[in-house]
Length: 510
Image (cartoon, rainbow, N blue to C red; front, side, top):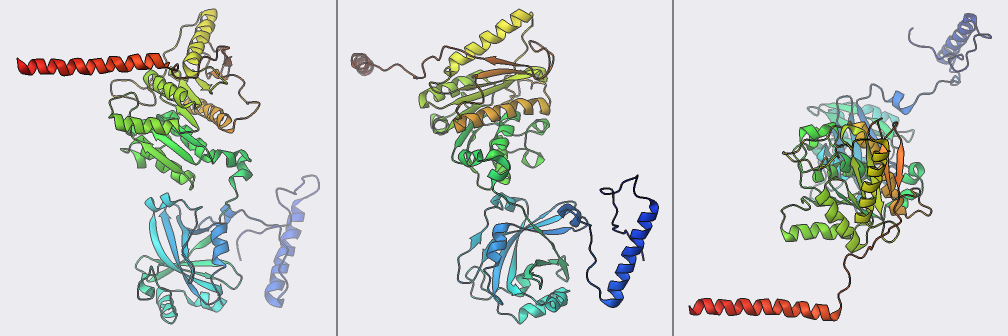
């Protein structure tokens, strides 16, 4: 006899002034006596105060079958004695192999796809065909299927379903997984291993997939109907995209022409699996694994760069149709274009910057007719920062220009991932507040300078300077043109063409 004893006394109810070692010996004797009585006399189950977590139960179990509540409910629709076709995805990790059920084909019904399992998982694992047997099975049956030969013999005597409209039943040699419900109603997944001569009993884990509102609150449902356009998918943009996807945003417009380099991994939200991809694609893949409902519209475009008119127009049109535009480039040219699109389409614009050395950053928001228009607000920010710096006799730091869209002729800014993440996540809260149109807003000012170190104008970390501007400025992109001005412009263009035609005729005659 050996092993641990689960005594009546433990760290949670032990009191040093009341309990002694003698109490532990008495408890151990009582436990062993009850165990012996149960073994020899068939006594009832011994009461136990021992409880383990799901994680403790799965220690040492390599193959784990994850079943979502939606899949669990649909499996009940397989009639007693009938077979259904199941489509699994298996992903191998160093310490565990995880199996997901993502589609079920029940005879007489169309295929059922479980949307909780992201389609993107298919890129990271293997698709496997399996069978589901309806009804509770006798314990003797599940115990008898201890090897591949026994399973093949059992399947050979069953009437199996048709796979994908083929004329022949699903052949047992194509079956890698068999899912049955045991006598106690728990689902048991059996997997062929290696050369198919060995069966492996998977450990079943009932997944917890509560609605997002349970953890995030009711705001997540409202965010799901919004579209966010992000320009620049570098260290800041990638973090913002992932955070907003976790918060409930389902639709994104991603714009960036840059490739993900190994050096980017010190701050970018992607990893080595995405090196060499366009950052837009790397972030899109990441989002698809975070939120299975994600829709991403990708534009591998360099805004304010050399692009065809058609390509640039497609990206800018998508930005103008978004619920909010985020400039995560810290690039003046990109900001000018984003600001122009925001004014013309009357869409909110959120932008941010990280100051070199990670000493702090800036977050700002311009909403049509509620905040100063982007160019006016930018000037107000520069004026306020300059005024504060002058009062403190502080030298202005180098800005973080182009940290999100880095070029070969530019040096990246120095800032840690934690410093970049802090400013990025503050910007995420500003974006969410904008999308939800909260009244009153949680951010009473349109811009904030946030300190992370005792540098420049900041006396200590987390010091904040709110910035406001009473000058809203005009949110109309262009002044309306009167009819006389419009007519004069047309006459001017017409005269230009007539002069060109006349000049061409003269050159030909000569």
